[in-house]
Image (tube, rainbow, N blue to C red; front, side, top):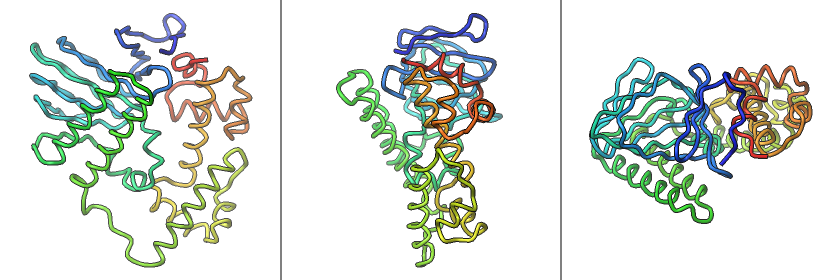
Length: 301
């Protein structure tokens, strides 16, 4: 597990049998077992956790009794066998009653957001899902959560990948059973052509994110006008060009912060931000902490 290196007074760290939860203001930072981005907690102890948010997706599976969540201004009473899925960066608090028990799943969504169909549906996944209808989709998602928990507990080779395979299937099930019919299907050759071009553009961005990429440059590479490219890219990926490029650079930077002890200048340059000042500003805006704080919480080097 990552060693926690936080200056005293800068954050409140709660030590659990299976790791730390670090609260800085209302922002929570969850540490993960080595070489993973998944953590699963079991609890049968009555408790209340104050309002907070975090970059992880949070999934609750109530085993006995009831767990009450307040997500933004909506109250969810999640009873035995029910599931609540909370998207990242959404403020929430929870209370677990006497005689209740639950599994709490936390995972970083970056690993699944590379899937283009999930990206294109991002706006529809950015809301809580309270699964309690006993439908085929609800039962399937509950089974997948228990499969992920079993892999997490056994910690056999590639267990993190096994957990994420279950998570991917959960998102596929949500889309098929709870979001079907929402997104228009491409119905002409122009949109199919756009899809192929945007896929090539995403590969181009992934290979050239260290360079100064402008919207005009990438639109020219795609053979589209600036306006048409912006609209098509957003429709196909769920992101604006600027947000996609920023997210790619942040992913690279976070990996360098966690896995290496390279200087902030080197991390900024190698992830495409150009300067430490820009890197620090963007990182704080998007992640709610500085790169130095992020390394202190998650760093494994």
